[in-house]
Amino acid sequence: MGEFTDKVAGHANELAGKAKRALGDATDNEKLIAEGDAQEAKGDLQKDVGAVKGAFNDKI
Image (cartoon, rainbow, N blue to C red; front, side, top):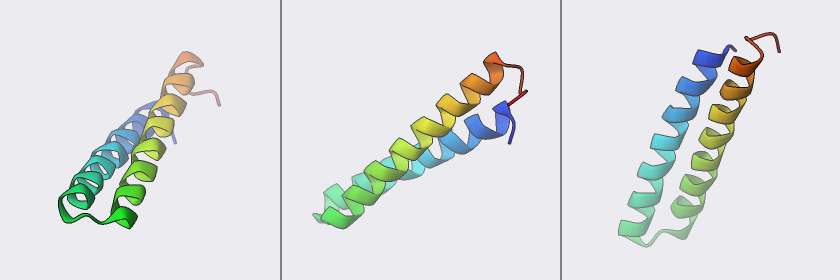
């Protein structure tokens, strides 16, 4: 994937993770909270990968 694709996927995962966490908090569901945290972290990582690719002009 390229820089833009990684960043978009990262934002989407981060948003979905936040939604899962909020739903987990509202329903007192520890599993959903953990899934939300993990998906949000995945999104952060994807955005970072996109930033690195951008720094190297998508050569990696």
